[in-house]
Image (tube, rainbow, N blue to C red; front, side, top):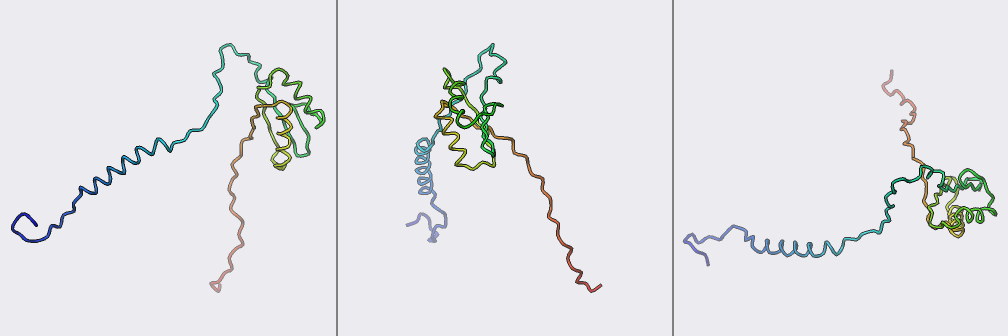
Length: 153
């Protein structure tokens, strides 16, 4: 039943149900969004206290494991039998100290993990990994052979 005397059908869209659906969806997303957000626990280093010694770089411990399975603590080469005891001596009384690891890319994964497990069992609780800066490779177009002359000249 229409109001008016034209007798034709209405060709307008009734937007009220569409607005109701959009509002319900908006409320659903407003409720779900805070629930789905997840955070990651990140330990941020504390601020350096004023008056910190400048010889901090000398106190750092860098472990290196080379391709020929040489073990270096800073710049001192040690054997695999001496390594656990030597690391325990260095970390004596300060097991929470950060120890940095710099591996050789040519060493396989299993040997690297075994070395890191040995370092952890020798007292290195906090191990950071030193990554060398990756150099951007320059693109060189491949040399192509000249195409044969098909013009008949």
